[in-house]
Image 1 (spheres, rainbow, N blue to C red):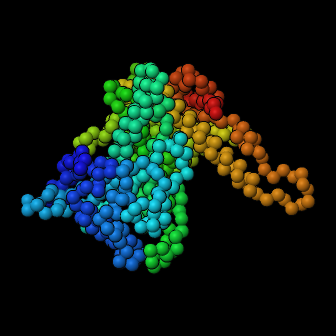
Image 2 (image 1 turned 30 degrees about the horizontal axis):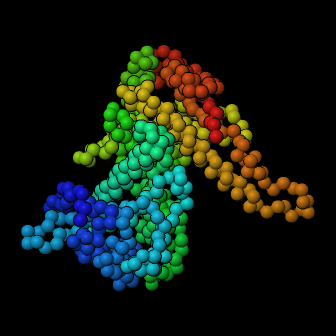
Image 3 (image 1 turned 180 degrees about the vertical axis):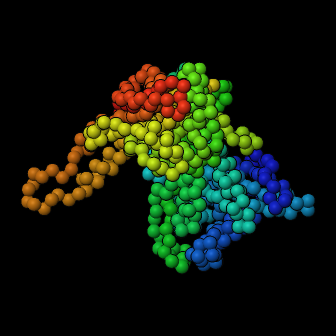
Length: 497
């Protein structure tokens, strides 16, 4: 059996534990399949048939009917982590605490050893474009009932995500080498074109039982299927055919080390586990650019861009997406080093928000004189690079990623608007020439524009070199205890589609 990782795990009930990694296709040879089935069934019964679900299913419903069912479901491409006790000295089986598994996404088909009702009810599917997104499935995430709410689920989620990132990077590197060998040229490094393909995890589960847990972890529900009283349920329930979590993908090499790019869909940043490190990155870059020699000491060195870890998610609200470039997570579990971040959102005038200082909202009140009916306007919310890594292309990379995401989201919203307008019935007034809706071409043809607000004396020159145009400036006097008069400037840039 390919157990390529067997490492010390967290202390559980005062006892040491181990984490075993079982490679794809190898679970069928795992010597404790009986114990694994009992663990999964005990967790399933606890969550689905007891008070936790208001007795949704009868107590005799089992997730797994035989020891061989899980290996049959997993097939040849699923990897598995198992957290367990040490093997007892008497040679008996260890106690299994938790397990998590992942695999490349594939639509489920009938499999030998897997009941058809399981395959049909939880027919995992996704509307994601598989040419633009690399999709992996979270197959199983289970914790023993007596150990829930102690962090084991989150630990397994991190392990599974990390393995997905690793395997994705390896497959992309192999593809890169294969393509370059076919052209008889030197194998290229992982580059921006490879980076931009988004890495996404998806899962299927019971809405009534598990949706709330995954929503808190940053997942987004994308499709729900009513299944009546399937599996002899006490009431109607729903299968979540797809929940998505955008995760990390391979980034550029930085200081000779690999990096990863994390993508957070709108509203997800508040669940990011390294908000402290993100605040420190933003503040360090702000101080370097605004309070040091770069700005001729415009602001005092104790002026911070963010006062609390929660301020940036509060400023971003529910419509801002975010990219973060970071190091890999260290093996000792310490936080990664964050290198750079960039964010974008549809343009809206700023209003007071809980958690955001009022003086920040007033001083950086984004506005535009663009006609919003003729222009699709998006705001570059943040673009930050670690001061020690500036002028190495990270800002340019993030700008490309943000612009690409804006183009994608603008096209999707235009298409949705087109479908909505075309679905409106024609007025019943006998006039056959009345126009009901605009054509797709007319909607898509809206000019796509990005805008930002920044400190003129510090950042205007940078953006001017990158094709932005200053549209307005505003004298701020010596606001924020500046050493001399300064100005806000509003800038805009047409985005190529």
